[in-house]
Image (cartoon, rainbow over all chains, first blue to last red; front, side, top):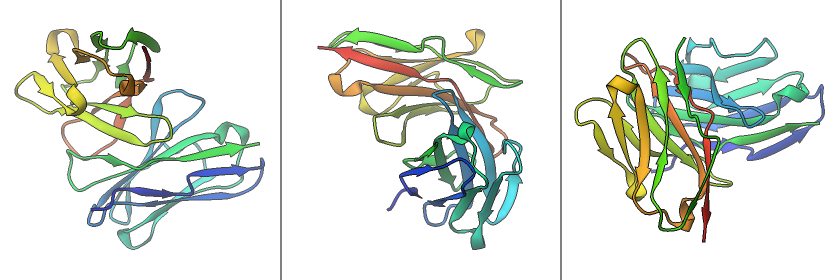
Length: 112
Length: 114
């Protein structure tokens, strides 16, 4: 069974540009989560999808971040425009029930 | 507010020595508790988890953790560390009522000396 996949693995963009991160959850998992780790600090929750609906988006830092989950399958996280403080590692996780969260390898975003 | 604390930012141990990584949590009720490991260039791998029941849980790679309600702790242990254990370790907690978000500690980086 394939795990959670994320694309790209690394993205380098300039301040003010737009970047879109993609997450493909494990097939059949209704729950999908985005987290990020900025500047070596703790991993922080961004938002939680149940199928295509946003269950909890309390961790989204501001309106420059837009997350979508098309048809309850893969998800994208767009940052527009990117700022220097957005640099970090963005993790996606998926799970089928309340016990599980399987994490992807992360996307390292560098904003210069 | 819910929080997870890992007091040690960096720990160095000799290969073959025992290891204990500390984790304390602050939640309204006992949460689900997890330990993850992240090796360089890799994603987060689940080492073990505690939901209820036996307070000593066994995980992969020879790790174990003990839940202590009185101390709000969930410390990770390994009796004999291998060089391949060098990585960053994260303690995390989730409410035990729904499939919601996890709260993570800052992480502890483990260095293993030969």
